[in-house]
Picture 1 (spheres, rainbow, N blue to C red):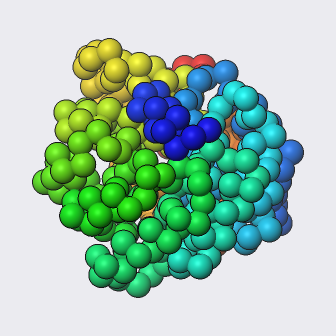
Picture 2 (picture 1 turned 180 degrees about the vertical axis):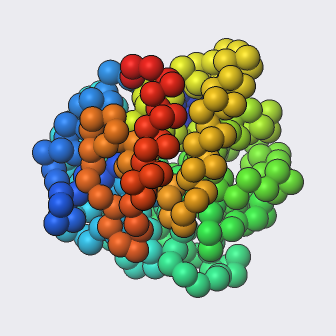
Length: 303
């Protein structure tokens, strides 16, 4: 898939980040992971981000990373494009990106670098180096320590033809509008805030109709129902789901640090498709919180 073909894929449809399955000893569980991807296939996500944020990229060592991407490609080949996560310092991010390309992924999502703040010149050099190390499409995730300005993105757009996507994880309306107006149609734009459904309407109004859904991992029917209503302009359905499910879900998610991933794994277990525990430094939901999530999910009906 060429970078421009990947860009086209990213401009419509629901995207998601599949969980990475671990066993009780916190080892990667390839069989369970493959079964998860098969379960999600019929629901029709337009692309999947393997070993992304919800897939606990940050907890995988390089060998496991390769195994995760291999399984995702084997299961989804010729059905759903696989975009691999890549991140860390520049040298390491390049190695991840090149490994994903070698394995046959359709592109990479460049996750924020580790810990340190960086100048715009440094961020430009980082993203440019990763883009130039591969031929397939790259999507940059503006989140955490990676906070690119419109001017920096304009430089990168000119230098890196295969930088075809911009994923926003800040939710700063002024800055996103400035980026969208400066870059125009040069990028595919993706909403990337946790529980993106809550912000979907606002992002659509700003020229970003596509987002990635974490809840697709455990309530895929509801996730698709919401997305289809969002596309159709069915505000009544969107508002009803936001009121009855997403707002109480977010309140529960906000009860613990790092719960944006932990609550999704808890939901998958309740749905009968457990991905095992999260790895430290994340922690699993408390039993009482799992019970609350189960009550919310029960109101949605069969998935």
